[in-house]
Amino acid sequence: EGGLMKGKRGLIMGVANQHSIAWGITQALHEAGAELAFTYQGDVFKKRVVPLVEPLNPAAVIDCDVTNPESLDAAFAELGKVWDSLDFVVHAIAFSDKDQLKGRYVDTTADNFALTMNISCYSFTAVAQRAEKMMKNGGSLVTLTYYGAEKVMPHYNVMGVAKAALEASVRYLAEDLGKNGIRVNAVSAGPIKTLAASGVGDFRYILKWNEYNSPLRRTVTPKEVGDTALFLCSDLGKAITGENIHVDAGYHAIGMKNPEAPDM
Ligand code: NAD
Image (cartoon, rainbow, N blue to C red; front, side, top):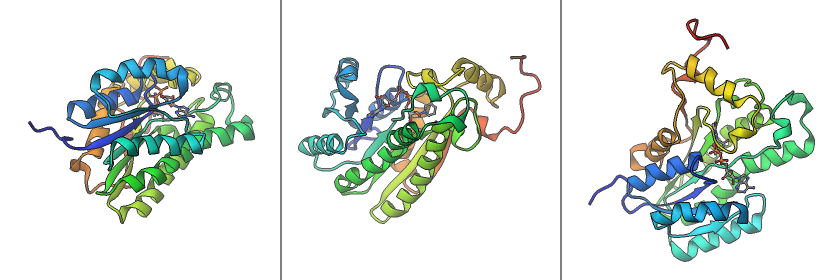
């Protein structure tokens, strides 16, 4: 029996619940026949993530807080016990204090700036360091970003700055790891209602705005983001690295509001 991802092993980091973009990505990869392992963030998420992923027969379901280097080391050590090689990692992790995902960017505190950068940007590099050692036959690393890295979006604030740094790190990682056949790419997803998104001020307005003004006149689903992540993890994407693919119904291509859009 075939399947695009038959025989490929990958780690998915960032499933919180069934609304997570990482869950849409999981579905795409599972349907294509990939063998999967998962990390979750501590006991609070364990209760939801373990029963969710169980039916997929995961190779491992591992606790990992990316702010803690020992937790990252332990997670990859666990993974090394069940797998002797790794083909892909999906990083779908971000965090910022929600009190600073509204109002003015200029008021961001140093503490929250550092925390947001650490979890939302540096953690991808920290994961790449550890994944590289297991990617003996090359591999694919995919992270999730948002258009707020490229242009100012209301309330996205410090997260936009962290995503800009994340997108730059994708290019530097692509150069460093390319010699070993490891590709590094980002998927820039349009807005989707998730736990993380609920922390962003006026999120429903942002969703509506995208629906009215994107070329496809709609928003996107986690599974659609997942299909592009699948493509990047598979051999179909094997000449693509350092790239950022927008899965946003075309919103990034637009320079002006749709004149036919309803008033908001
Ligand atoms: P989500 O809340 O389902 O996922 C965010 C995940 O980050 C959670 O699983 C959470 O446990 C994890 N996380 C946060 N801090 C962590 C830590 N210290 N250690 C380990 N894990 C930690 O929300 P989502 O929207 O699916 O977010 C996934 C990714 O997609 C994020 O990078 C987000 O910025 C990005 N993204 C989201 C949207 C959107 O509109 N929802 C759009 C573009 C990009």
